[in-house]
Amino acid sequence: MAEEEVPTQLCAKGDWFLASGSPVDAAACYTSAFSLSTEATVQHVKSLGEAGLGDVLAVLEGWCTGQSWVPSQAGSDEPAVEAPVSVGVAAVFLSALSPGNLTASVLKTDALLRSGRHQEAVSRCNALLNAHPSHSLALLLTRALAWVLSGRHSANGVLDYMQAFGKRREDTVAFVVLHQKRDLPQIVRAVARYLSLHEGQQERDGCAAELLADCRRFLSLVAPRGDGARPFEKWRLAESAGSPELATPPSAVDRSKPGKVKGASLVVDRAAALTAGGHADRELIHHLASAFDGGASGRPQAPHGALELAKRLVEARFSEYREAVRRRPDLRSDGDAELLRPALEVLWLVAHVEPEAKRELEIRLADCMLLCGDVQGSLRLCQRLIASDPTTYHSTILVLRGFCHLHGGELTRALEDFQSILEHDLPHPGSCVKAMCGRGLVRMLRGSPYLTALDYITASRLRLDEVALFVKSYVPWNQRGLLYKVLQEEGQKILQKQSSSPSATTAIRKKRSGEHGSQNPSFKEGYS
Image (cartoon, rainbow, N blue to C red):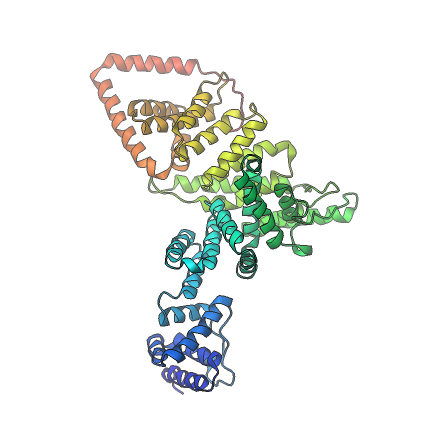
């Protein structure tokens, strides 16, 4: 049979199956024909009449809902139809036969999500939720996963999951376990992180307490269990949720047994080999998580070399991010945060197993969360760090908290944090430069362009490269253009004044010399 005749033959075979009362076989024939000849097959199936078309649509919706492969045709002699057709083709076919079909739309939205276009997936879900309010569960859970995978707004995803879970608990768990199984580790991490950051609110807010209780119940139903679950994940769920029944605690490992220690060391060695070989961060993180197994205390312990390896990965990802930011062609360009996702996961991992460096690691975590767009999560972590110890790395944390406030529109609080850093008795140079950038931005937003220029001129004279990198990283993208314009205009005014007044130029030079001579070389903080 000629290749161009195959679609016609498949449609005829589908008609026969449909007439014989076998709509599944008929739909398989039509879908195979559609993959070879789109328009002709759509016209043919639409001509079957309301009953025939309805049967085919029902079968296609079933395949799309179950995300299963379209079965191949038994007894077919044509090579073109020996292999099953993907559910993606079935979804496109369904959409062509029934434009706006909800089932096909959900599957196409899932395809956007899988291709990394998370914001598009969220926007499509929003539109579909408005158009189909009575069929919201799949759309709500798809949007929740898009939020979680985006990393920037994972808390929104947790709220979507809890909204669905509160309304239809069993259906929500079934959907997540069946359709989002491969993303369960990220979903679990997002919910556990939300719990750990909000656990203090339940004492003050009854609604928050109910939400956190739902988070724990959700995790208890969907979190991986048994031997296949990672020991670290099971410990962290119980730790963050404060619920002993939430997850089975990690099995006690007797560190006195050489075999156990050797096994952990082998995992670290393999992770190191993966790093040297340039393998994906995901596999590396998996091996590191396996290495941090629980000791007799039930808490993760770090085998020799694991922490250093984890820290090297974090530093490598931050370095890669900084270089990507420096290479941005446009001042308003945003993005590159995906480069920090592996560092974010590793920081969550090691901050729980290294008590001596816990505070420093959590500061890096708060920094990473801010850069990845989780402003509220970073703010809560900064608040907790300051409350637990108001002296150690105080200025560094205040910088982060100040920019969290600034991103949230809390200009007064942001200014208080930046001013506190600059008025410190033993200022830290890195923190002061960042604080001047932050204070200058607040002044710009409050209509004081000249003071803005003074802050950025002073900061640039101290650390020019750091100021440029900081503006591209921490200043909201939609404020960088205005900042550039303000600095350009004020700089021109200052230059014009200097050219018209030589004595002013001499005075400025003397002032600069005095400032450089009076800088205090003794700084309190070493973290910048």
